[in-house]
Every structure is written in structure tokens, then in C-alpha cells.
Image 1 (cartoon, rainbow, N blue to C red):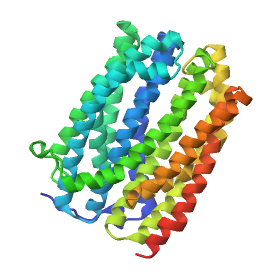
Image 2: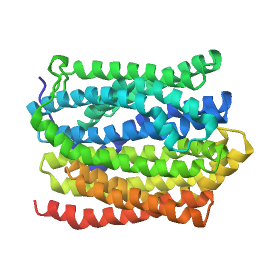
Image 3: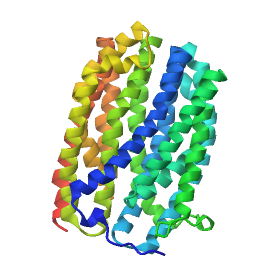
Image 4: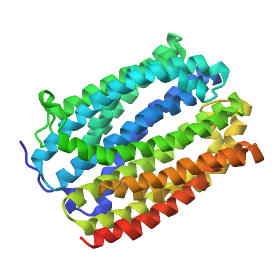
Length: 449
């Protein structure tokens, strides 16, 4: 087995290595989002706005609820792997990788059964417009059939990124993205399968991506090589993984639950508002694609340097992560604001839908900068193994406050902007809490090491 050699993440120039790590991660996330966006464009243009609302509305949020929880849970595994890898503890890295894949298999099977069974309940409880209910349930049930390969790919890609390899997950995503586009065209345009065709195309691509990532992991000459015959749970590592991952998973659920409340409020304004929100969500994903990738970069760099005992580099990572994230956010916000109508027109040509989308983007895009403290600070805190307090802050600042805002403010001012403003308001409150906690608690602990 190849020993862990010089590591650019723990030894190189931080901002340069972070950008070198970030860009493949960003492009990978871009291609992942691209095939979701292509789904929306093809459905919106060639099936109709009802189908767009079915794929991008309540169904999309229910998928986010399950996948978001596992992604948070998986972050516990990747943080442990990053810390072991930074500390050059090869045996623990090997065990942690086997433990992570076992978690993906178990989670995928559980979520598949739960998702298929609970799909109708989730669609109805969200007050989904009647004309999209059947299509939403059909889409969800087909989508959840592919949960096992979905989670295997996500976990496998997370393992590679934890050790600093963000390039090979990018290659896999490029391949599966173009496969998905071809399948969408064949199943939706030529075979007229509608939302079912989109869901089936997604499953096929998830299977392809999981096979590719498993092939990569099983053909390595490194401590993080996967031995399929040794996939099992290690009690000690599993406990550490769950200690970090469960709060992170709960945090992801809180975001999604608050978004479910938002979605229910959007649904009350009718199909055009739902379609506009779905289209805007695909555009809005550009921001989360960048900030999320930078958050993963911060977590990986903090985790490896923390595991290596290089606490000054941990602090430098956070400072430089703030600067990089702020620059990217400011540039993207400007582009999205000034080109909002051409972007919305990619998804629909219906005038009422475009008007709703314009209102939504003008009310939210200028305030994206308020969110970056949450992403950077939470990424850093996960990297050092702190996840319980961030979960509590998210509970209060995002989930609870958004629900209170919708319950109290919407009856007073029943307009779409009232719903949208819940985002910048909660970002501001939660950012302040994260900044206070990081700079006055976590940073002090690092200074004392």
C-alpha cells in the first residue's frame, strides 16, 4: 500500500491549493446541477409548466430532505477521513473508507423504502397544486428507486474529496451529465415519457456514476483504497462519524424543512408562482453550487490541517476562505441580478411565470452576501469536529425564525415578496450567531492548542 506522502493541503500555499482543489469541485457541482437544469428546461419547454412544477416544486424539496440528511451524515465520514489522512494514520483511513461505504449502502436501502412509501403523504401535506399531484408522486417514486447508487456515488466522491482529490469526481460527473442529457432527449422528446422519463434518466445516470466511483476506489494504490470484501461497520469509527454527521444531517433537514414551509406558502399563490419558484431554484443553485463547493473546501482543508496539528493553517484557511467566498458571491450576484430575465426565459416563455420570477429575483439576489458567514464558519466547525452547536444555531436562526416569519408576517402582508424576504432576514440572524460562536469560541480553542 502506498504511504501518504507530502500533502499540498497541509504544506502548500493555502489560497492557491484551495483554488486548485475548489475549481474541479465547482465544475463537478456545475455538471451535477447542469443535468438537473437540463431536466427542468426539457420538462418546462416540451411537457409544460405543470410538469416543471411537479419536478421542481414539492418533489424536489422532498428529495432534498432525504439526500440532504445523508449528505450531512456523510460529512461526518469525510471529516474523519480527512483528519486521519492529514495525520497520516493509514490504517484508520482504510477502516473509515469501508465504514463510509457500508453507511451509504444501509442509508440508500432505508431511504429507498421510506421514499417510495411516503411519497404521496409528502406531496399532499405540502399543499401541492392539484394539477401536479399525480406527476409529483410518480416522479418521486421512480427517483427513490435509485437511492442506493445515488448515495454510493455521493459517499465515494466525498471520500476522494476528503483526501484532496476533487478531479476524478469531476470526470465522472462530466460523463454522467452528457449521458443524462442524451437520455432526457430520448425518453422525453422522442418516447414522450414526460416526468417519468426524466426520473428514469436520472436513475440510469446514478447507476453509471456509482459504478465509476466504485471502480476508482477499488483500483487505487493508497490508504483510501476500497476492498469490497471488507465493507463493514467499525463501531469506534461509526460512533465518531455519527457524532459529527447526525447533527450535520439534522442541520440539513432543518434547512429543507424551513424550505418546505416556504414551498407550501409559494404553493398558495398558484401554479404560475410554483413554476417561477422552480425555475428560479435552478438559477439560484448557481450560488449554492459555488458557496457549497467553497464550504467543502474549507471543511477539507480545516479537517486535514487540524488532524495534522497545524492550527495556524486552520485559522488561515478560514480567513482566506471568507475572502474567496465573498469575491465569488459578489460577482455572481451582480450577473444574476442584471441578467435575471434572460436566465428565467431559459425555462419558460409564459408571461405570468416570468413576472413572478422577476419579483423573486429582485427581492433576494442582492442579499446573497449575507449568507457566506454561515457557509464558511459551519465548514470550518465541521472540519474540527464541532457540529452540535452549529445545528442548534441553525435550528433557531433558520428553521424556527423562517416558520415564525411565514406564520406571522404572511397573513399581514399576503404577497410573494413577504415569503421571499424570509431568506435574507434569517441569513442575517444566523450569520451573526455563527460569527460570534466561531471567533469567540472555536478560534479561542485553536489559540490554546
